[in-house]
Amino acid sequence: VNELVLTKQPDLLIIEVAVNDGDDLLESTPCGASAVLIRQAAEGIVRTTRRRCPQTAILFLEMFLRDDSEARKLKTGCEAWRDAKEEEAQEAIGWYHHVAPRLHREICERYGLTQIDLIPALRSLSGQERQKWFRDDCHHSDFGGEAVGNLLARLILWAVRQPEAPARHRGSLGAPLDPDCWCNGKTIRILPGWTSEHSIRRDKDLLRLGQQTDWLLLYAGGHVTIPFKGRACGLMTLLGPDAPSLKVQVDGGPLQRVPLLDRWCYYWRDAVLLLRDGLSDTTHTLYLEVEMEASDHQCLKRP
Image (tube, rainbow, N blue to C red; front, side, top):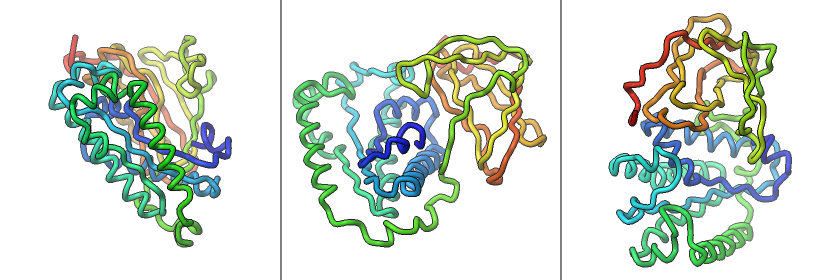
């Protein structure tokens, strides 16, 4: 949030569960823990923005993903979305249409923010109207894009012209809804000197759209030691058919096994994996080791 948004000192920040997040809900196998992570992430964005850019207006936006049978034939996005069975897709759509907006609503009420929810209005469109407004399951046609864009512009103008939120929302942030919300997060690149023997491959940069960067590739038995500060740590990586299992250790504690291969690893995808949380807010040392044994591919949804 700080590197990509707050350094630009924006006047308005729009937070949206975008359609690509539906891919992530499928790939993460939605469960009760997903609701916790959604709220922790969203509240962390709000609290970090309020602390560092108190003048920035924050708006939550809920967009529509088609849930009719016709749209199921037009599925776009990653393989997890295109290959999902009907019940799997409907579950992810339910999280996208109901769970995420409800969690966002709780945050908006807590911090005095505006939420624009277009889902009920667009869901009311008939099948024929949806074909006119959308060109597939989520992307608008030229007609629909212009109509929704104009509607959003009017709603945003209405929202920013409303009286300022009560002082209790604009002053001290107070206690968070979730004490483990993700505040003050930072992305650090792993340095070559932190790793054992490795190779380097040039590939897409997950932090800079359209650019490339050097990736450090560890092989079976390879390891890396990463210093960090905070209450949790994760790994941003690429997952695919060669995804291994990791041995994870923090501050010399017990080793924990973390399998990276899941049912969707028959294709390559970007992934952010939470490795450890619940730590003290201080400096730590993370040790990762790639297991020698190959992962069992029987869990894959497709060969």
